[in-house]
Length: 242
Length: 242
DNA sequence: CCGCGTTATAGTCATAGTGACTAAGAAAGA
DNA sequence: TCTTTCTTAGTCACTATGACTATAACGCGG
Image (cartoon, rainbow over all chains, first blue to last red):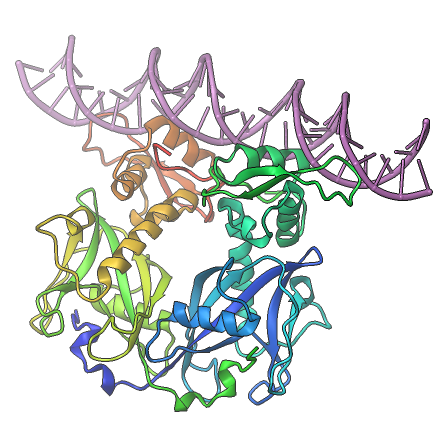
């Protein structure tokens, strides 16, 4: 048995890696779950679309780098975002130029505006997630198709057992708006009555905040809510058909 | 808005990082959940205990490195192990010598033997997880206390909604042995009758494999089982008292 | 070889949570 | 005013759960 640990060696004697963060930034636009992608202007993968990301700087950790990139890409401060680490992708040939490991993150936020065009040739836009696997969907650079697939599954399952759906709506919100988040992310609508019952029965999921007065729709004025302190849904709210 | 992506820059122009894997290897010994630690012989943290780990080599990904380290540390091939990525730890000052990011993994296996002493001065031994936070528990090197805490929570929650507990017992096993896994990991015993009902009602969790004939205990000969193809427990089996 | 403690297995029963519905009422617009 | 749309408030059968009780097999000590 070999009992050497990493630190038995001199770390600087080892081949250098570049470390980056990549972000799958999700929002809901026009009732559809969407993700921000940037078009690559240079090889490798020129013309393909990639998750926004960048290098981890010498004096920051990966989460700080992710927050920095998030602010740079969306033009928004971290307020209202949820950000979490997803997984780390380390295949030796994932970047043809050199060894790059990427610490992927997932971020959610309420409906965000269109990104402004950058100063370089690259474009950035929101893609509906149901476009990603279609024929006229974007070609994805590096292993970003895999990262995106993992990120989507993370978001979908997190809605089941956490209150993160409320991060996708602006406060105050109605239960119909919250339900629309589930519908967009899961691709199917939870039953109306059962959804209300579950959300209202989960202590601290939502907090009553008066009643909408603005009108605009037919039907009664809906109750308004803000996000509550609860983070977990117990027992979980399952996707229909499981 | 800045739309540069990681690949807009030259990766080799960036400061080098070392990339390692660290492993929290769990097993159950004497009815107690235990984790393998190695004692450090050199600074930094000489005399402290650390998770086994090592560098990711130029031609392998982190998972391959983790399997390699796992085999080196336990002397066993990967057969029967469950291994999964936990999270990546990237604090700039987590290693005082240089910038090292660690892709932490969690591994489970049935009761493993004592590690043999290595050729260097370092020792390796199993620690019961309930010793880790006690006064005469080990001092932990680097940020390994944090990694271990996250790994423990991962194991505990994975027992709730996956069939991974069966990875901790040798086949064939009895339901009492499987229940002992839950008891060890959660620190409390699930109700006997309800546990049986739940396991047997979960399609594909366990597969009947005859009846024990060896005896040794009082009471009837228990039924034997092997691991089934199911990976998820739906709905989850919750820890008592939630 | 008898009885006792231990252990495996098989129930019971009240309650909570869910899926699938139905019903009533409020507002907007024709 | 009438119709459509939408929020709110149920109902009911069924499933899953927590907390028990009951029965039977086996080893062992006397």
